[in-house]
Image (cartoon, rainbow, N blue to C red; front, side, top):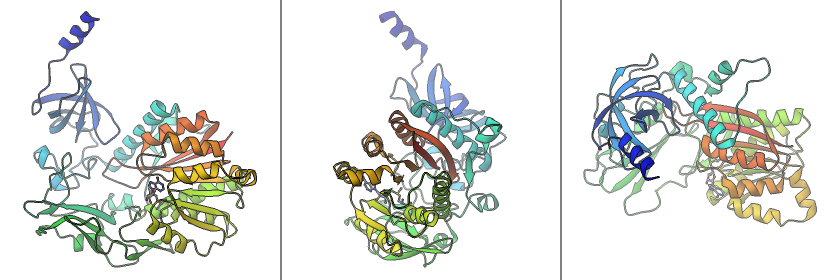
Length: 445
Ligand SMILES: C[S@@+](CC[C@H](N)C(=O)[O-])C[C@H]1O[C@@H](n2cnc3c(N)ncnc32)[C@H](O)[C@@H]1O
């Protein structure tokens, strides 16, 4: 034991923060960083592309098992490297002065999607025990290259000008406004916001000083004027956050609180609405969907996905949306008001499911015949809620996920509880960042 640990120790020359090292970048990790090795130790390296050789500055060396570094120079560039879409996040800046929020902005859009597919495949393998396979007769490499679908219009715009929600921060000392730096909470003044819509670009207070404010939320609704919500240092709420704004999903209107949850990409609500609608249509085709059953839209927000279920199943659909934010529930009630069988509840999902698990036999039977759509926050549903859903045992589960690792973990729980993963789609609705959205369909075996 002693010998082994002293050999392992001597294999690493300790890395120092600020030191510059040369790295061969070999893979992609979850979280927007690439993977390299330095004297056997894993180094997560920012602003690189797998396949490149880079010089990188060490930013974190506390852990024995891995270190973190940021690219300062590319020695051998990938053919997928592009000029960064945001000058203030580019390599020619000191790593500490690079703006955050566009960590894939130096990579061609096709390669960004291929990297996201790799992250999803890897997460599913490592945390979900699922090896993704192509449909019969299809080539796996080709299927993976197309797994992450671009949003409509992004191939024409290069994935720019899509964000309808942007949060900027205010430097407490200088009042300067800007995004946080990529790896710290330092405000970086910027001259442009290339990922934001034109409406946001017009009202963004870039270059201005806003002493007394802490955050600046910029919102560009589809069917209302752009607006700004100021978060003041001394106050928890933002003036105007409960104002109702109008959004459009194709030609269907939705009312949403200005400060409430709404997908950030202009096309994202339509992309997810259509994907959930199509997943339900497939279940209907297979004779597995019962509109009169105990159908649920968990983490339902303003009712977007319950509306998608109704678009597939028709006006006789029975569905309950469950959402913790009372304002969003009020919006859901309004947005689903034409659906006689819709009920919008304010509740925490775990508490509501605990109540359903105590329900009478006929209610439990309706739930068993039902379909659960869920769209949890980044942390995923988690083992507790996933276990409760499995215990309720609905016929189908349609899971919309913004974190592939959380989805993979919940997939493992569902598969161990008798569910089969029958469909997986992914959507690049956050171009130039490492984020993407996945839709997984499960059926009770
Ligand atoms: C990713 S959003 C999805 C919203 C909606 N499905 C949509 O597409 O617009 C997640 C929602 O879950 C809500 N939420 C977070 N934790 C929750 C919990 N424990 N119980 C109920 N709702 C929760 C948030 O308020 C937010 O509206």
